[in-house]
Image 1 (cartoon, helix red, strand yellow):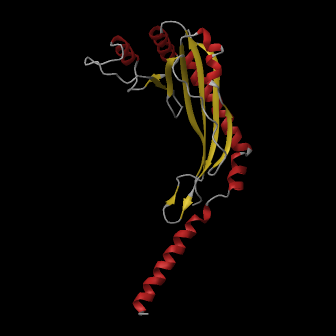
Image 2: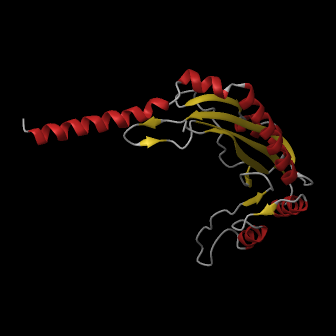
Image 3: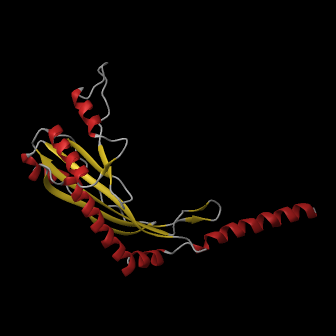
Length: 230
């Protein structure tokens, strides 16, 4: 074999080994699980849970909404690495979400106006792409364009100082198909799951029976992120 070809093969082999070695800093399942369950990470989760609760309460009161259920999801993912393609931006990341479910039998547009008014009075700032005026125009047009085409359902969303994700307000008729949140499987790279799901079918035949509309107020936050070793 020609010396030049031997040098080229040796260079390629060395490059492959070097790239593969870049993946050696990936956490094992046990390492990532222990970190996700550590006291520091659990404390960070509890602190952010209080923050989410505060901002969601700001969006929900005062209003004619009747609370019927709350769903939460606390989940951590290990960063994956591949010597040939690089790795995720994080070694471990954790996020927390909360969704509050409300029922109302009142005039929906009036309810949403009250929610918007209360959210602004509580210091929440409407997102530039989401405003109560868009909702009013949608219902004034009966959800259709002048040509009779269906318009996309608008939404309401807000920002809270110091909170890294919008607060979303959504709604539907109780008679509409409702999809319950599923609990994620604890399969790699997921290393921690703590969930309080809500069975929407049970809500429909239970506390939502007295209401015409289901309104949701939700948000999420990333409460922990560990970088790769430098």
